[in-house]
Image: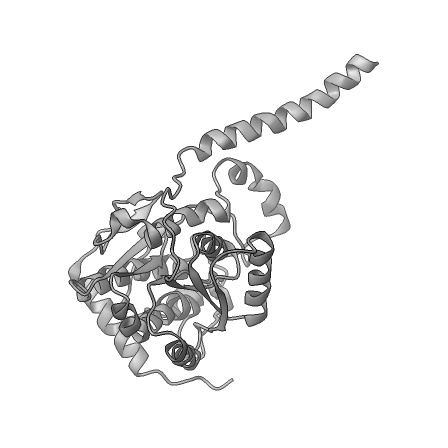
Length: 335
């Protein structure tokens, strides 16, 4: 009886150990940022720093003594995140919560006004915040833009533009744009950047397995990094995009149902990174001294990544021009 009990108990334990070893083996290919340079006196601004990859990035920077501005839509969650970090790291860089809603140009302008009143320079801007919402929900920003275009692209486009003087003042400085290799699935239709056609199809029940809104916005992020790096050439401000990898965060919470946790368990165990593992490339792009002066690149696993997307200067220029026009012509939508 005893031996049978031992055998039955040993089987699940062996499975858990085997899964753990396989995951550890898999994670060996996921790079880690090796730079531990002290960042005392440096000011980092992270959008969406209260959770997921943004939070883990903030933790890594605070550990290196940096001052970190938590630019978050929900200021209470930002304060809670900061309190959590302080419990883990009582000694470290300064943590500053500030309210920013990237779905509102007024909020962006107000935020930048407060930043400029309190800081004379920004060493690194990390455009991390993002949304991924089913197209059938047809959500829009305050100005009426499709939510992925408005938050993931235009919000960061406008924020970066308004902070350029503080970034130039901190030269050598950096802008890190958190994109995704899902940008390779993007397809820009300049006659319908707000995806009205795809949204109507989604409302009729047509499946949008890869979320065209999200993929397109990540492509816009990549183009934005390329375009901005060209415009800031010789300014001392490096601009790079990066992909954190396939991470287990709450970004795709609107798509997940209870049964997905069961179906995706093997994928999560073997292929999905934790938020901390995903933050490594972001931290690398923001801090590693070896890539200073490198600009207009795309990074994944702490190394330059060659995208499969056929980038063109024509598309880059057109997207930049239309983005400027969309911001200038904004008209807040009354709720």
